[in-house]
Image (cartoon, rainbow, N blue to C red; front, side, top):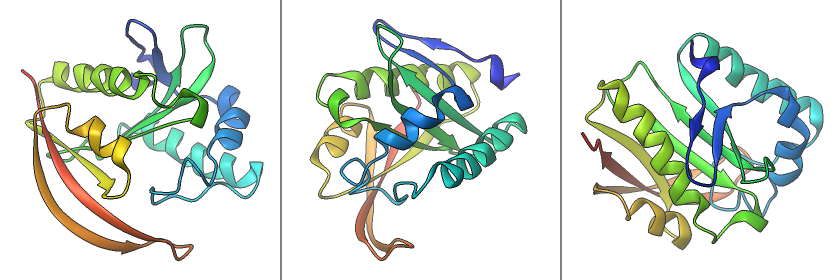
Length: 173
């Protein structure tokens, strides 16, 4: 069962999201963190509960992974998502709270998630989208074997304009 999944790396524990992390998730999913991402910060705890609860339901069905990234002392650092587990190429997403950025945790978390997915032996590649203006996110994906795809202008529900570049990260089997 996916809810039993735990990925352990040198500094991180990556485990299925639980409502124990709802408040830190909501607090740290700030306008600064989401500046170049499609989702907006949650306006209130009820909205966060609704959205993340839906992700938990999707995970129970085996459609996606909604994972919490915990630091060396067990502190909440952010989350990793894998959408489309039943698709040919799942889409990866990752975000870290502002105070955890620039410390190598993003690369370590993405390596851990990719290692888990590669171990399933089901996928040849994964989709990763990043806004062209988000240098840290572009730098992260470019540390992995990848193919750089097209650029698409996207308008979010709140009216923000994103310039999303699609990358295909190759499985490392």
